[in-house]
Length: 359
Image (tube, rainbow, N blue to C red; front, side, top):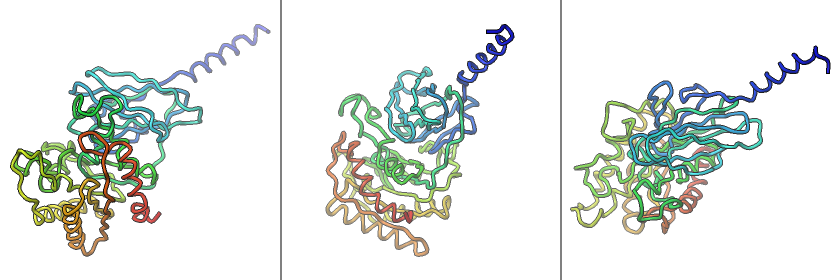
């Protein structure tokens, strides 16, 4: 080889090496797509707050390295998906930043999704950013659905793949990504938001008559879905459908020890109507659907459906639809739906939601 060609070869090799080096992208990069309830903590940190709240980004190259952290909790869980395909539920222990490197499929680009597996009360997942060869924009999906509910909607007690039922802590069997809402949304090619809290009801909770604990209408407008009203949810993202599944805890008998009053149909219906009015105040053009409960049956379900019809009839100028589940024998932990049960629930809901979306 001629000596005159050596500098050119060297420059080409140098340029090629630079092309292959990864770049750090922090969590506030504008090309990262966030869904659900989240908060920018600093220029390099974003908190994923609610169940299945997510950061999605599309990268080029054969690998990506993600930096995540559990905030103020002994452990927490999140899910990684690639191109909307479930990869794994990851456990975060301690409060140090953890580095996770993924090999990506041999495609021109791949969408990476980080989803909080646990609910808001379990503490934040802190997303710091990622290393990748190149970052491009992530496509928006044609629809957005918000799912409002309780532990069922959270995907609580559904996933015992790491820790068996009745062992560990309450958060250890959470997997919001595989709950019925996100499952259904992915099938419909829709984005999703989960505004759900375990134990909560419309006028009372699982084991509380709204004396010691707040109910969903009292926390829904707060960013962290708790009584801290100093940080409000901005409601900037407008869903096409708002799905409400609240009534399981209102109808429950509690733990059998604490005093439990008879179910109050009037109070439940009144609170429900006021809550739907709150929904319309933030989302004037959304379609509201009311779900009974996959865990309520018999006379209780008859009462629940009657209340939902009264709620629907109140809004004469709005088209509200009601969905009634087939009875489901649940197989998850502590009388909750398992991951497989959530698949069944999503399958039941699919034709109904297709009709609402005119698909």
